Image (cartoon, rainbow, N blue to C red; front, side):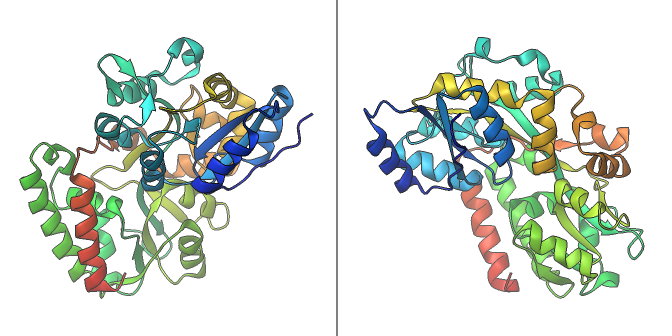
Length: 361
């Protein structure tokens, strides 16, 4: 049996590893470019037991870094990536970072049809599909209902009655959520970037004015969990998975889908344009969509897999947290992130820089 070897590698180290292994006759290597919780040791161990001729190497990343790494190599250095569903179309048109998927090699029958068709619609170019879904979840509000029972929207984070008791992360999610709270549809405005800039300017003004209300601008899920569990803050912008994790420690702290709709994301499987282990990549995709592996993966990620019955495969505590958070109406009101057109991320980045400079966030 191949020894499990999960490695957090920089792009340079990956390249060196490729050169060192060339022609060595060793087992094939599957190089994953994925999120921090999406390659648990146990899952890799079970995969390598089933496929002893494949070794798995992991580089943990995020959307921005994935794009940067693949742009730097023209789509080389990795065999399977996991960008979010809204981060594929534009970069594929502009940079050609991925290769079309062969859907005949993926058991798509296990997917929740709405999620599969949504990702396919978002990532189809000239009739070719570039991504299929894996994990999905939402961003919204977390609140300690014993201390802030009225909170139900993004704008409540700036309510003076909670001065010094709220938190947010200065990334694009809070821009979009605040825009919706102000009665705007930022995704519709993507079609008119002048209009979108006006929305961003109004959002920046709102969030800068909010700086005296906000206790802290969190950087990661662990930071946020500490703030909430200590009682330093009573409400925050959050990923639902972070709220679900905290719910197990304090059931007063729940995820609150904003009245304007929680923002929904789907992390996908996409094969880089110069990947060298396509068969291994397809094996990994099918392997992690099996129910027993989905359970392990959801326990690690805190999120639901995009398969039929994904909620039932959540760990008991996270399933209870989900059921405490979402009604059928909340699910119907989800706002799925729209494809990001060229130029939008630069606009959002400049807006965030402006807010950070004014707030010290």
